[in-house]
Image (cartoon, rainbow, N blue to C red; front, side, top):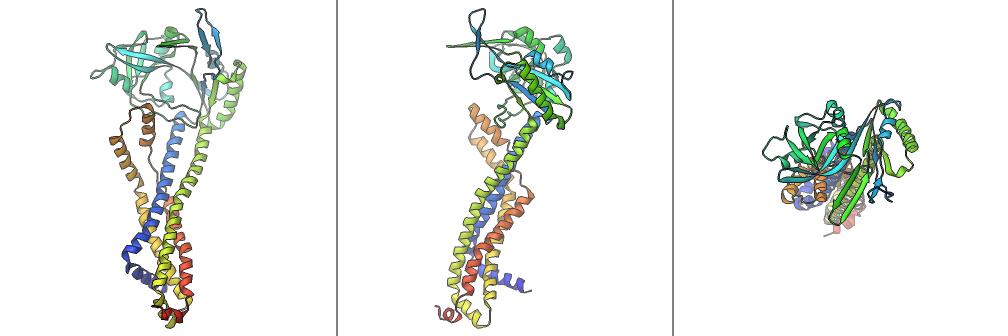
Length: 447
């Protein structure tokens, strides 16, 4: 009963100066809110990065071509210089399930930038030569029609699947299915339209950002026959010529525990087939996932520490106000001591007031922190409305920001509230002890 009586007296004392108590409490409120909000945003950003890694497949190994920094060119028969680099079709054969244990599939692709035209409409797009397995590997969903089939691949059919933006740009107001349009110098029949898909951000410096909405997918063998391996680009005042057989091979492994050993085998195999290691690279999504989890811990520590500083500032504000309160209530302290109150009673009274002040601020801060996802969603809508993206950099930022959803973990609520109460105790001890040590006679003489 004594503790309840002490709390009741503390609340009454705080209510005597409502505005001052409320302003003092704001430091704790915003401190607790910032801790929860920062950790929620950090958790959301980490979850988004991990989801992007998981989209690559935890049981996948990605081998990709890398353009050498020092271009090694050889003169072609036409006198121009052709840069030859990257993965070979021989690599695909050596990395097949028949050659390497635990490998269940090897999915190759080749990418070429091409101009897309349909009558007077045109746009720049990316031509992707692939196999039917590419759809499942890259999580492509179909809006209408179908994806490429094995029949299309083996018969080298002039068919394609187009992304949503390609359909909207080249075929506005009409159905593109079973219609043909020009890709570079060739024509392809549309057999399917993919659903819109947000661009992926670059992950850990190992994978570049990837936009899927300007893609045109055709059978890999069709690309090989129609385009060959050489890609010559002539522009106004510029010229480039390069020869790449395959840009990427996605290796699927039977079990996650076999991913890392298989990656080592793949590396040794490629080293035997390539003179230079600089024109290819291996990305293991499982390793990226572990890195993302480690970064999440560091990210949470940094953001939590920054937010905790505001709690310390709030605690300093509480100490300042309580010291002023002790000065104002010196005579009251003297009266209580004269009536028999012990130093312990005075300490408990002022410390309880401090804890109640910090505790109420912590509760309000926790409530505001739980609303972080709703507040973040409102900010995203405002930014999207008032600042429409125009450039590719802006669009990449918008895709990252708008796709981020803060995740409020239950433990962060308890942590933030506990810190707020702890701050109240730590910064309330000194004012409480100062009040308890006042000389009763001097306190009674105070005016």
